[in-house]
Length: 240
Image 1: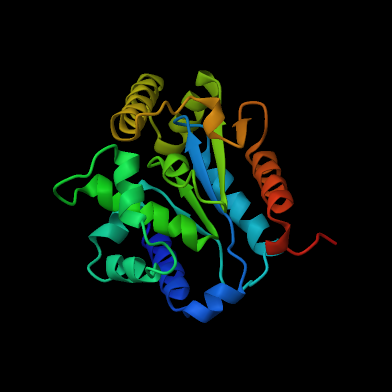
Image 2: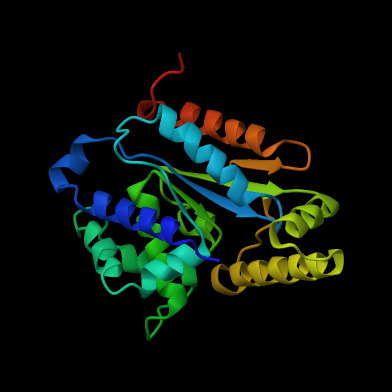
């Protein structure tokens, strides 16, 4: 269920980034974005929540916070009558002159109409370029694969661990949890294959694959943060 507070954070994030002038954008480092692909029940929300706290603590330009985007929040942004225009205006032609070509290339064809998938793809690509964002699902790792500031993570876990997680989060019975996991995983995999012609389980799509059945959510977040800060050192202050 979409939490209003999360959507408001997304709005503030987009408005803050779109308010930057072209000159400001040139002077400042582009911050990384992190995409998270996951097996259902592997704890993507919990890991993201802990990861944001770590990254906010050590990121430069602390006035701009890291923000979490999942499929519900991205769709809500697209449905909003004002935010899509703000997002679109963020990318001037001088910054990225072939954004439509990139979207069409990802989708494998130049479509005749503007579908939800196309809108989602362009929105994810633009959020990725803004940086300081954690994008969960929606093929974020594939959409942003050519962005130099993108870092890709895959979360996995044993089925029993995922069943217990889903039961706890949603209050499902064991049978209902298994049904939910199977449907969600199937739908996610089909989304990636049908729209981007890739396999979500392909390990070469990710910088890191983390098993949250063997690592706590806290340790998973710390591991991701350490890798991101090491790969993009100019965006972070040194740990004391």
